[in-house]
Length: 226
Image (cartoon, one colour):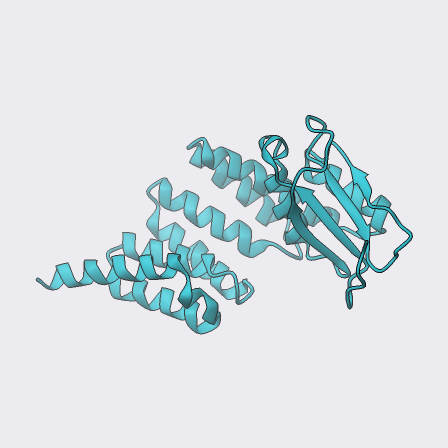
């Protein structure tokens, strides 16, 4: 039974069980979170049934004790999810943000297949559309693709731009910056970059990822002095 949540009109739960994950549900979940829709809370969940018809999701009206969850099936693309959220929740989704998200996910797929030139091209196409949200994600991802293709200078330019426009909790932008600086041999600057991430978002300083990065950079600096 739904429990009223202050400021929340709908709860969207997207299945991340094995079958739906194979069908791309985690990318759809991330897309839904990236939209940051007002009055809508997004989270992953266990199996919703109808395996094989996914990715599947449940829409739960917050505080309406008489309403049953609305089950949604075949949410295989950002466009499918956007259409469902518009129909069921009355959400208004920026068409440019939607297109840019589709390009970003296509870029991610290309990067996973080590096709970095295509990934860079797709991220660039999305950035050229000048979306109202998500530029930090595109810049961060393009930075990683450029670094992987051997362009550390270009990677640093993108990472720095991502740092300048990202939310405080998006520590990945500073990690991209540190990666590029490290590749350029600027180890102290790389250490300062991850330190800046902690200053901006304190919880990152307690993460395993931060501790491993800091340790690796400090070890490199120490070895350089020997």
